[in-house]
Image 1 (cartoon, helix red, strand yellow):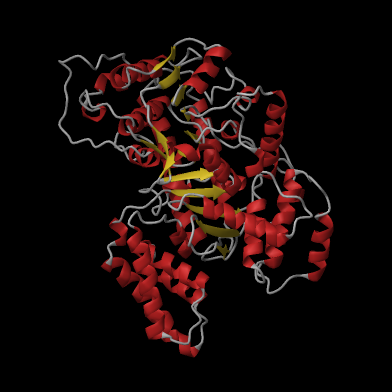
Image 2 (cartoon, rainbow, N blue to C red):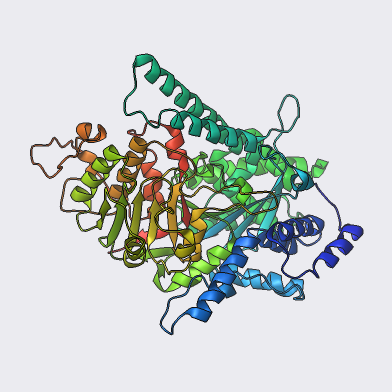
Length: 599
């Protein structure tokens, strides 16, 4: 869909459509993406603005309406939901230049530690007329990069073509494959749901064979996401270095290189920014990917061939010289379109070792920043009282083994936390836990919305970190044609929760319990006892209630370092050797802004 200049006929149609105030979300989404396509080559910043506006317009409108309703009915001291001023779309009569400047102002105002990377699919007219609910499209992408803070390069955008088979040249439908994996995984788990034990060795082998096959399919898909879909532009998935001097040194060396190698070359800001990411990601790129990126940046003329060849070598040598792969990085926030949210982007090689969260819109990232900026330090929402935790465990009364495991953990590692286990909470109890705790953790089926309706979630103010360890607890659901997808986590965002951790699809209870306890023990400190990781959990894994305070229980040696950053602790927990299935590791994601415990 490359275009060299604005299409006059399309421009005229889009201008007429702009006169429609408050169109439906999907219509506005399509119009904004067509506008972006129409001006990408002539005014990139304007195109980026349209791409930003195309993300979740219905959810943003819902946030505005919820704020207005609360404003009318709230008392003087009531705490409101996300402020409408931070997410509302501007009037269609506003000049486009003013809209772009407002977007840039938001980026400058957000913490300088943040990097936002936005993934937006191209407009595809086929999706508007598709009637098969099982038919999905893997479209070309625009990847936009926003370096927050002042004195930063302007946002830039790169086009990524839809993936094609290297042999046949036909389109590869990754979305169909991930939907198939999710469906097959659900079928495999549902077929054994009512069983507490396998009826024999063949049945057990068959089950694990199916799960292993699904794990293998997902690993292949993740590999193809980074190598076939994103290719060289996966290098944009890198946050800023904690040592800011490294960023400055890289910029300086890039300028020196071009001055020495090609004094007449026009090194504009976008080219310099992309070269900087090529340096930062050089150790993650193959020679072919580096060559392709360089050829995209440098026109392939005779005078530039030497520059192309030398630039790739320069990026690699500078990355090695500065040992960039070993340098600590600030968290990365992925702004992911709903149609791409089903992919476990966090499992890509370039992201698996770093702190990364996801949000559906730049505006929602800005809104969360505004709501919590009084408690944000160095880019992190600070949690000062992690002992003030609340939990709900096994409210449906049918996961006894899970209840034994989780309550054993809480009684040992987090004895100050309060909650309900093995009984159905009332709506009043559920609400009280959400609004009074610094951390809220749910362990049961789904997201718990059958105990506390979502329309009530969005009506309260939630400052707690919300952990939903249930099957598909933060999964986006397709609810119909020409309708935005819906998920539980969206209501928690509207209620101002700074970060929600949950699952993209169905998971098993043992693996989820292992992931939960590995994560919480890594993140929430308890210096008074031997670390959870050092305990003998043989009986615990069998679903038995274990008193870990018993002095006779075996304790293994080992140096366990606490990780106060939520996103990093989650990343470390997902690498635990105790987890059986790759699908469980990939399912767990964080949605929101970076969070850190500081006592």
